[in-house]
Structures are given as C-alpha cells and as structure tokens.
Image (cartoon, rainbow, N blue to C red; front, side, top):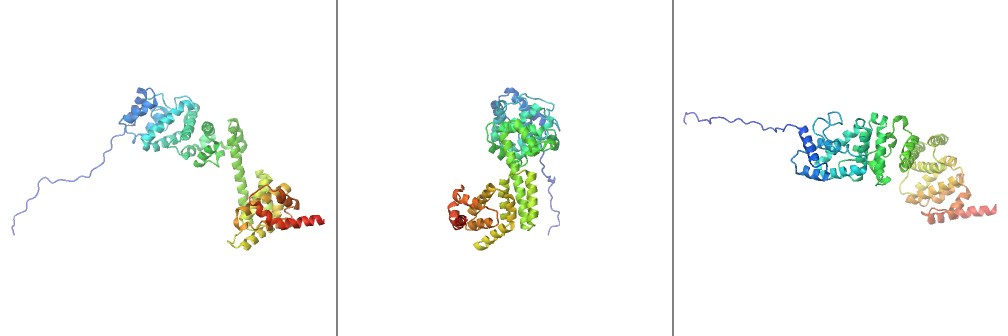
Length: 411
C-alpha cells in the first residue's frame, strides 16, 4: 500500500441554517395607503373596493388596521379608539350620519371585501370586539352609529360577526353600570327589528347566550323586571318586554317544578312541601292555573317508571296521586282549577303510551281523594274541549260516569 497522504479538497464549505427574515412591520404606511384610496375615489365604496382589490397591499398582515380605517377613517392610537398620526379620510362609519341609509352601504361594502378576502373575517371580529369593549371612549352619537352598523350587519348576515362577539364584550361592569350598554342594545334592537321579526332577534340573543339574561344589560341598581319593562316600553319595544316577562315566568315555574320534584322524590312530609310551594308561588306572583300544571308535572317527574310493565306503571301513578292528593287539593281550590288538572292528566296520558289506559283510574282516584268534584268530571265528560285522545278517554271513563249519574239520580 502507498504511504502517500491522500489529497483533500480546498476551501471547505460551512453549512448555515436558513432563517425566515421577516419584512419590517409598517402599519402606518399601510393605513396611509388605504386612506389615500378612499380619498382618490371620493369615498365611492364601489370604486374603493375595486382599487383595494387591484392593489398590492398586505391585507393578511394588516387586517385589523384595515378595519380601523373602515370604521374610524384611520389607524387608532394604542389603547384608544381615536385616530393616530397619519392620513385620515372622512368617509368612515363614524363620520357618516346615524341612519340606516347612510350606514348600510358600508355593510354591503365590507361583505364584498370579505367575499374576496375571506381571511379578513377574523380581523373584523377582532376590531369589532375591541371597539365594543371600549364604547365609553366613543361619543354618544358615535355609539349610536356602531349600534346601527351592528344591527345591519346581522340583518344582512355579514360574515365575521358571531353573536357572542357582539354581546359578550358588552358585559363589562363599567359599561353596564354607566348605562352605555343599555342604550347601545336599545339602538341595536330598534334598528334590527325594522326588517326582522322578534323571533329572529331572539335567535341572535340565543346564539349570543343572552336569551335568558336580558336584565344583565341594565345597570345593577336598575336590574328589575319593572325597570326593564319601563325602559323598553318607552323605546317602543313592547314585544320584547312581553317576551322577557314570559321568559322570567317560565324560569320561575321551572324553579318551582325542580324544587317540588326533588322534595317529592325525597318523600318530604306533604305539609312541608305544601308550605314550600305556597311560599314560592307568593314570591313569584304566579297564577294558580299555571301552578296546578307544574304541581302535576313535579309529582309525575318523581315517579320511578318500571319500564313496559303496564300494571306496575299504573300502580306507581296511583300511589303518587294518593300520597300527594293533599298538595293537589290545596291548589285545586275551585272548578276551574279542577278542570285544568283534568286537562293536564288527559294530556300526559295521551302523550305517554304507557299511561293511555290509566286515565280512568287516575280520575276515579282523584275523585275519591276529594281533589276532583263530581260536577267537574261530568262537565269534562260531556263538554271537555281538548280533543287529544278524547274519544278513547271518554270511552274508558264511561263506566265511572254512569256510576256517578246513577248515584246522583238515587240521591
């Protein structure tokens, strides 16, 4: 083997790791460029949209700044909603008149932009949330414009504005306490209901998780049903007031039913349960007719159903009726309440297949326990107005009714 040294390559190459070198951020230049497009087109939003589409502006990096320019005419100062140094245009949402006619073109314009640049949807959401959380930094007239814009955005189904993005940021304690939020949502509701139904509005509130929390829009010192009704009635929103009253009513009924079912399941003393229900009804100021329905539901919800065994199910229902008859008797204080109870029993037996054949036995048991009077049963039998399952139930109750009529004749 040769002892000569093997040759080596000269100028050794050292490998270096490649790095992504980011272009320097220049939000001010981007803002000025967008403002210039507005100015060059004299605020004609159709022409502005075309110019933006043809430009080489970096929207993916400066999406938030773009919407700041749309809303207030220029880039905002850090920690503020006011324009920063630099160019500013006067065709923004904040600069226009506080009317739907003046603001709607901006909604349509934003929708067009989002169709071409869908990635900006998140930026619209970011800027909207930030502005709503900073409502106190806007003038009253500017807040009204933002409310109208937001209502029109929902009405036009503008992308990028989930309901929670609007309602949740509003619930800042300081904004609510000053009444700013109440005024904002009042303008929002009024504008939205111009072209949409109350059901549509409730759907938005439901998506925003505010359907059951409308009172939270009011300052803590005025957070009552009466104050809510007074404010929104004065604002011409009586349908919303009626809805809220109905919702609160339903919540109260649900609370009574929950407590009652729990006590019945735990087999609390019937006298104690009666006092509890009486107090709840008094506090909630509920009509007796609704209380009768809830009491029956609460008693039945506590039944431990055995499955498909018809006789066991029948026995369970009759056992509940016998045990809690004093409670039913307390609130079935007249013929009208008794008839309501019969309708309630009829509906449950109609809607639950395992109880279809139990109806006559339940009615007879309620009669024997002095919950239902003879006159009530005969009136239901002869003129009962609820048609659901009526023919079947009338036929099943016929032997008992015949017995009642024979006893009446003998007397």
